[in-house]
Image (cartoon, rainbow over all chains, first blue to last red):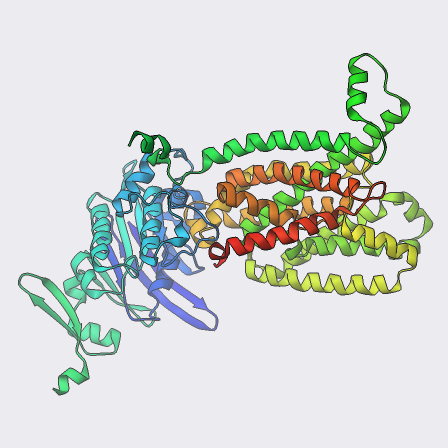
Length: 261
Length: 358
């Protein structure tokens, strides 16, 4: 379980998060959605211990503030939004950075499996800095997967924290990455992901937390959270939730221009 | 097709340069050994190492003169060259890893500037010290002052750029520039009030030289430099992770604050000791790691060790050049490293422009 209670974050003089309670269960993909500046990424940073916060975050029943970086790294991997790399590492060298202390650095097998998982087999010898933004994002995902490859270790779930994992990807690879998240959860791991795309969220998330102005408006199953009134309130525009028999839920903003016609 | 499979590297290892890096380490050990022999064999006096070695092998005793030249002049100079070269190159590599910038240099964080200021204070104002204090330090006053200056500037820098246990690398870099400018200004004032004899010492020291090498200096610098070099292998994994950024490094299990503290102390010790005994020798700390990254990649597990080896070898070779080029006089070694290193570095920048934009 991931249990965050009464999380507040202040970047003086602004209060970004106001005493948020947030929960995520292993075996499920939990999405955090909300408009720009609502505090999604800040919440993510608090959950991963990347920023100072008031309150308590417990992962697998351990207070993360009390864990050493390497103890946390054994429990969860974190995919940042974008990762500029300081030196000309090759793809294989970047993915190898994710292998934890206990795993031999020579475990090329795991590196290749992680790269194959993100559809980048054959990219091993390419320079990371010469790849496109989307390819870089997938290399980083492979690095994170290599870090916490098995979703369950010693009976405890492991976790993926993804900050907008599909922001730089084409639609084919968006589906592929969300499928990876889904499969990780289905195998018993936990996935917490910040999302912008509500339709992808509706497709893949088992639980959704809607964040607005530093507070969680609602957390629950997508069908509970995705309703016209709640989304319109959060995003400050007219949002319509529709569903088609063969396609499931889809969400569209309802523009004034269209309404006038 | 058979030809292709023969030439193509093992696909499972494509992009993995660690084997190449290990092979390079072996080659560098031999190069360093050759450079050390060269440094022992060549010098202003006519003493020939080969004749001496052949004589020794034949059971003849060394002449008193050869003995002094080899054991008390060239050997300490060679050992000091290796220590200083290794210290500067490794400090450069560690600093670059810490700042995530291939152009960072120990000079940038004010360690060299602080050490230089300490030395100049000692050269110009040393005469004002009470006779008992001056006598206590004697000849080593300059070295001690350089070392203290390097440490003080590091501590000051650290206080400025660390808040609530977290060091901001950007603040540290900017504070380093400010400290460097301040030290430069103070040095300027001291140069202005220095007399002619002091000025000559300042110029010589400022350009860096191994000429004053003695066993006493070697013993003064060796413990700090060797300690720093011994710590370095433990920094490698953390510096690799840091290439992803501080947050990502922490997420893959690195204690970033501890890494930074260790790296800063290591660099302050190594650079302070090196500047104290050899003055300001530039470009080794930038050129060596850069060259190695081009050859076998930025993996610090190999970069740091190889930097120590190549830095030591290059400084010995530069020292040999400084001794023979205007023999029997000597050029300060800093001029040699800058003359060779400057254009070389520009060439690297031109070739690698794409990879440096970050």
